Structures are given as C-alpha cells and as structure tokens.
Image (spheres, rainbow, N blue to C red):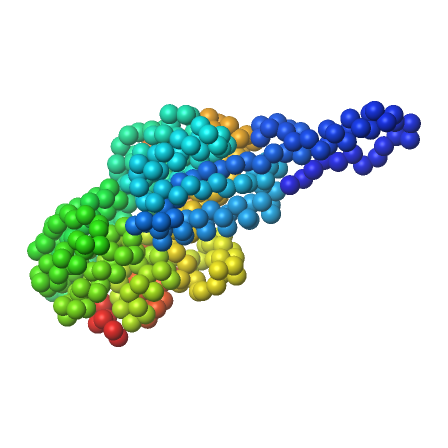
Length: 414
C-alpha cells in the first residue's frame, strides 16, 4: 500500500499546522475516499469449512487467501489492504444465506465472493442481489444458477452442462467396434451433477451406447454403497458418476473394488480433480484411469497458473498434480475482481457489475473469462483429465499438450 507522506516542512511552519498535517496523515479514509492512509477493503464469503463439501470449502479458503496475499503484496485494491472474512456454512444452503445476510448487513463488507457448489451459490446470489452486491464466484456453474437471470452473479469457471462433451466426442471418434457398448449413469440429486449426467446419457445413447442404469440418489454416506453395488452388478463398460465431492467417489471406488468390477471408462463429475485429498481417500493404487471434466489442472502451461502453483507448493507442500482445482477457481475469482476494480477505478458494486457485463475479456489462472448476460463464462474451455500413475493429466480434447487416453482404464490396485 502506498502512503503519501509529507517529505519537506517549511522552517516557519507553525506548531498547529504541523499537528494538523500529522493528524491528517495518520487518519484513515473510507474505502471510497482518496485520502492518505486507507482503510481496508473487507471481502466476505460463506465457505463450507465443515460438512459434506469441507474438502472443497477448505481448498477455496486457500485459493482466496493465496490471491489476497499476492494482491496485497502488489498494493491491495486501489491502495486498500484486502481483509478476508469467512463464515462457515457447514455445507448448508440455509446457513449460506444467513451468512451472506450477516456479511452484508452486520459486517458491512465491501464485496462478497462465492461459496462452494451451485447448491449454495444460487440462493446466496439472490441475497447479494437484494442488496446490490456483485457475487463473483468459481463453483456455481449449474444451469439453475443462471436460470434466475440475476444480473449480479458471475461464474469465472466452466459452465457445467456440457462439461463431458470432450469425452463424448472422443468416443464418437472411435471405430464402432471399440466404443463402449453399455453405460451406467448414477447421479446425486444436486443441480451441479444432474444436468451433466442427463447431457452425457442423451448424447451417448445417440452414439449407440446403451444406458443400463440411471438413478438419482441423495449424496449421503448411508446411500452411496447401496447405489454403487447396484451399478457394479450391471457390469457396464463405462460409468459416468454425478458426484460433487471426494467421499462419493471414494465410496463408489471401494464398492467397485469389493465387487471385482473395473469399468473400461470411469468418469466422475467432481472429486478426482481435488488432488491430494482425492489420492488420500482412494489410495495411490486406485486412481489410475479415473477421469474428471474441468477447465484447469496443476500442470497447466498458463504462466499465471504456473506462478500460483509454485506459490501454493512453497506454502503448503505437495506436487502440482496434488493441487485441488478448487484453489484455482477461488484464485480466479480474486483475479477477476482485481481487474474489475482496476478498470473502473472504483469499489462500487454497481460499477463492477456494469463492467463485468460489458463483454470484456479478462484473464485468470484458468484461462480467459468473458461473461454473457446471465454471468456464464463464454470463454472457458472444457477439458477432460485422467489420473495416470498418480499424475493428473489433460487427455481431452486430443491435440497439442494432451496425453493419450488410457483406455481401458487400468485395473484397481495396479
């Protein structure tokens, strides 16, 4: 933060003038003022630090904190130090709503940034909209979030509905004799997962892949093994699992191993992208060949991403493959907010909202960001990633920078 200081004093200055000058230098201005020492900009978020989404919420916390640390080192926002305020929603949409009401009406934060999951983002965005706050977020890409057509929600990440398209296109490119013949489509009852699974099932059915199982289930520990056992009994060539977090993928993996079932393709909509948390849950011998759609991975050649990953490893340890994609999503939220503040030279939510709707293309560790009228990122690119021998690799779409798809996937425990 740059402070403008009086460097030279006239010899004949009076004591009263000197006292006033010193008082002016030491006083704090409001966030919208242009005075000398500036008060902090407080940015609030509801995060799932406990509960079903805790691994994701904790990764988001790290991503936000890493961005704030970097931005404060660069001078904060218009010279104001960034202070983050997080409230735990315990993975509950109801608590997330209460948290944003408190952040806005009690804590009087300058900006709000998003929680984890579309399930929490939708109602949270409505609270922020009620009070004229922008809600820039990185994990609310479900169609239900944008169906409300609120003008204040901006998702910096990949819209989820067609996230499996690279895999579907790859299957379509295979000779008919090599394509999977059957598929199972279990999905949690979550606005993030169901559109992806329904899209994949419809497209794959048109390619001649027979759907032998489809079921929507509550993503609760007591339900997962029973559903996974049903899927295993079908012995489908491929499984497209609608999951939001690591525990669900862990439960299906364990059930498949116990049943001696190893599908040729196993894609989960979330969980395998969570780096070290996923590897710890399923074991280093039970990840090979597992796929997940996303827009970012730890080995991304994006220079901004490389810098962030290096900083993350220096602070938390581990490897690039072990960095949770949620970290990049949260960091990207901060980057987009920074660019909007700098462009408008303002801490006004109304000006930030108008600027982000101006079709400008911004940059982030995940790649380019450009919002449509409802806040979807039109510039995001869909990729599919696969674990191969404990390395998290981009495999689809095929081309420069992509590793070859492991097909069929390796047996469990190999």
